Image 1 (cartoon, rainbow, N blue to C red):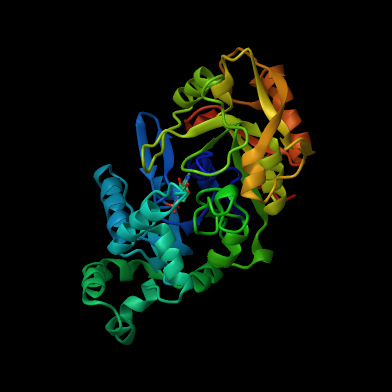
Image 2 (cartoon, rainbow, N blue to C red):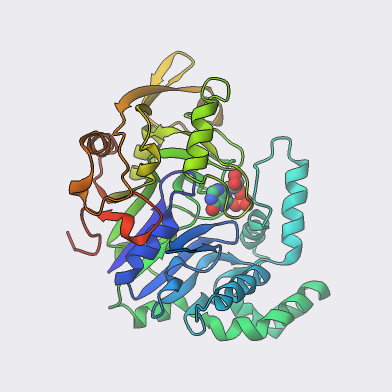
Length: 409
Ligand code: IMP
């Protein structure tokens, strides 16, 4: 069975925690896109792990993880992450494989990324990890894939500096390399999780272009870049938070107004620990944007939604969510493509009553108070998809499964 997990907002929805949770029942975890721009946080008791490249199932001792064909891999960042895992007792050897079609991020791409940002009239706010450069070099057909590390003819066409860099890592990278299509054919009876990075609204095609990342972070990325085709996907899960955040620049219709909602913004940011895992930047915060969520749901054929950070609202008397936009006097119910429209969009908000109870101790859906259920029911009706899992804290046991995605429907 093949389940795809993607972010349904602008990234940072809690995919790491959910993939880690679902990985308990999976044999393989394949991350299909992005690179060291991603930051997936997993909390196990007192231990917290920040993963950037390695798929989130790695913390189980018996799971095989694969860095998929759509990923762009910075060897320095990868081996630093693996050394971190090793120093904390995670035995990763033989359990971290890399698709031989994945592209390599060269050190100079990071510099180029920063330079491009510095010369942009309207910077995107990239993570500076060379991601956009790696994907443009790939599209220009000048990229280096893992498989090319064994191709002397290809290597001979490179600049000395790049060749020397690759030579330093080839010996360690090549034993991890797999033909992902063949590997998944051999493991076709395994339960496999396909882990997305970033989120649907940061996807190069379905996102708020040009304020996006350069990889495929929508569900179809799993098919194009995860080693399977679209008909092999059994289910798509879309992870979203009870509110919305965004890092970097670009339109964000429900963003809190710093003058009138500054205190609320600081409360959400601090309670939800809304600081970038990769860059440490404070995340921009706002109410849940249901227009954007419904767009993400349809653009990705999301079968089931996963709601995270619901507990962040525990102490609020009331809160709101966006059900439409007003754009230059017109009410709009579908997520616009134009950045100008999105920048001019003012949220039409609906109020919800808070539950004023701590959700962190809830272990089943029955423990959830009525007001929180009403919020979830409204989301389901609006987004036209069930909320199958609700997360009320960072720990694995703070995950309420209403319907296991591993059951066939
Ligand atoms: P890049 O991926 O570094 O090129 O950055 C492009 C945009 O995507 C910037 O706004 C980043 O802040 C954002 N971004 C990239 N990766 C992530 C992520 O994992 N979570 C949230 N935002 C991200």
